[in-house]
Length: 250
Image 1 (cartoon, rainbow, N blue to C red):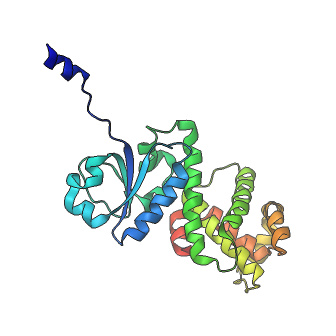
Image 2: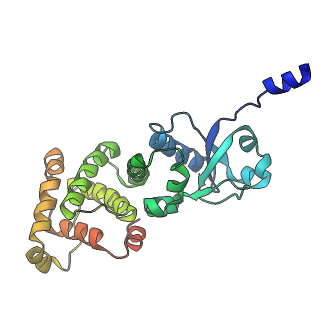
Image 3: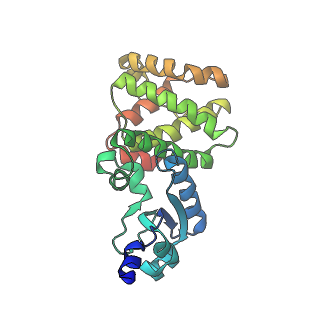
């Protein structure tokens, strides 16, 4: 009959998928996190909405919060879990220091992004997050231009060592080397590297690789990296555990 026909024709509207960003310190950080994710995911997930939301509102209203009702939220990304139903929460700090295979962000996004692209997503997220960190440190340099050079330098180190640096090491290198470049330009003194004689004698190949990889930066900014500075880079890439070194630097 006509009623059955109308029922068959009716299809409930499909809600647009979204990621919600939030931070208990306020909307400012939630908006920055949203910008970071948009820049990271736009190439692979162009149709998904990324929406910053007030943490207190999410926590108080739960499944009744308007953004939760209006969108199909695949993930909440932030600094504290508002604990909303079965929507997965990804802590921004853990996403930065966990490797792809152990990363909750990786597991959520792997349902939407082909596996062969997940390493690119991870590297882009690390780079974008590092840019936010570097903005807090640099005073005279353009962070985006610096990070492009630092990215190439890190790639040369990884090729020499036949490895992919874990996220904490990669983050630390981005921030440390960016600040190192500014320190060289402003001619600020380098802290004494206590192991310099032994390091210079035993790590000649590593020193050469760093000098070669750093040569583009040296020419661009008219600076020269010292053995002491190379020693600190060596300590970063060989430190165990990497997470503790990352926290000490930042």
